[in-house]
Length: 366
Image (cartoon, rainbow, N blue to C red; front, side, top):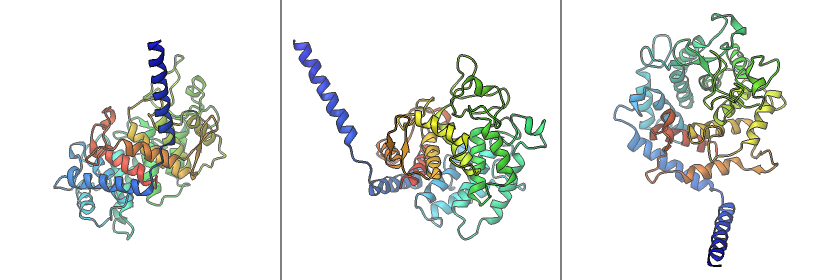
């Protein structure tokens, strides 16, 4: 009897806690702005080095991401911290327009994110030349008709690490976003080539993906790359299919919309159906805590460009995604204003990187 009473008491407490969580009010804009202010102060006062950089040991990409995050979340482009960071970035500008260290293995990633930073600070046209040169550089890195068998190659249209190394969806998504951020139209040949690659990273059989992977896992989500034999960071299905996962599916959705596809396109519909089945901010679906803050910022961008204030899951429940995402992020903020992922995969043990991801996500939640 004593055991039964204790069990009933525990159940009652558990239900009460669950109800409390369910009815907890969403973060108000004032709370989000206070969180952004605290995070911005952390980056500027604790994250930035005297030379203007953020986590310089990782190259210029984190500095560029921090600039984009600060400016998009409200820090003026003429703030000393931003100007110093841009000056640091410009030290990496090459004659060919790339913004990266010599022989960098991540030149597309670094230059694309630098373009996002420059675009965020370019309201008066002060960085027009640097942006134009960088645009030409990243387009030159893209796999096009000059490589391999052309459009028949699974790598066609993609961008990757290194110089003409195997392309992947993450790099290609940054390429597309960078081009769109500087005013490149959705019908630009480079973006349409990239759309070919993006479509081939989706587990959707059809005229846009005739590769063998979708037939083995036809769930409509996205994986890492169809090139060089195909790869998913989430692993393979028992029959050799490439598993879809959250961060790449949001990256695919965002990229398709930036490339001009509408909600009526079968590829967009399939991506939304996968995301509806796996809607959550508790984890990066298919990856757990790995890449969690990359997932947050990619989801925020994708849902924002989708243009819907609510997202309906597979059970028919509507979610105020901006409120739910901001609630999740605010609950994870450290006392000093930063964020850090306990899972350090993909450099998410670096508070400068993770705080920048979180700030970018919150900028879309307001």
